[in-house]
Amino acid sequence: MKKLLLVCLLATTSLFAQSKAPKQSNLESITLAGGCYWCVEAVYENLNGVQSAISGYAGGKNANPTYEDVSTGRSGYAEVVQITYDKNVTNLDEIFKVFFTVHDPTTLNRQGADVGTQYRSAIFYKNEVQKKAAQTVINDLKKAKIYDSPIVTTIEPLTKFYKAESYHQNYYENNKTQPYCQMVIQPKMEKFEKLFKSKLKKQK
Image (cartoon, rainbow, N blue to C red; front, side, top):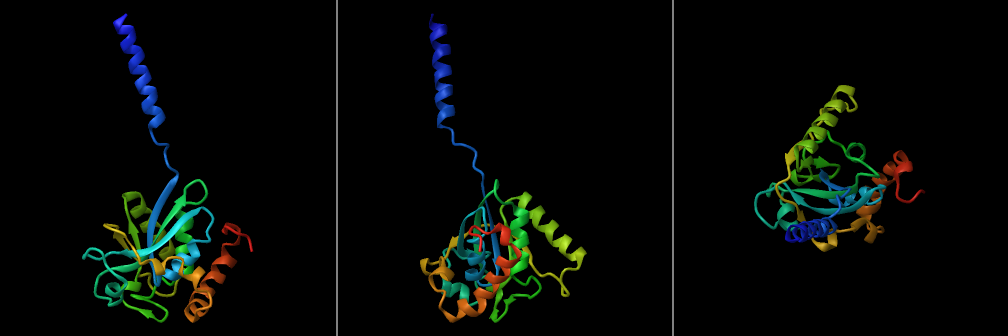
């Protein structure tokens, strides 16, 4: 009788544990640097399948960097966007396609008028799968000779991501009338919307 009770108890405990176990998440994240994070964030916020696009800093050594620190170009940090996406809706390949479409991966430490190591083109990987995928897409682009100049995008390990100050989040959406948004971000948005029309969250 005691053995039967023990078996019943173990079975009940097992079922309880299973019910409490979290479901496997379909969400994944990748951290990208493609110049000013306002531009990168604005694009990915409109890509179907992206749950969030958060502006921040990665690639430096000193903890808790501020915008002022990073703006000096001496901190080692890059302006990045951490993109969290639903793998059932989009995938890493599509994320990279957008990335290499909306920024210039051939200008070293520069995007347009934004100059400095903080504006470098970089992919920050968190595991070997992401590292290999990044290496593959860059190699494929080189073989296809998509660009006239060499690709300078770096592939760096993501050691730590720091979220940028609150006023940098959703910057484009909150400041569309600002000159930078109209002259720099808007053209990138228009290019993205034209080339990835079927992938937008809201069809236009």
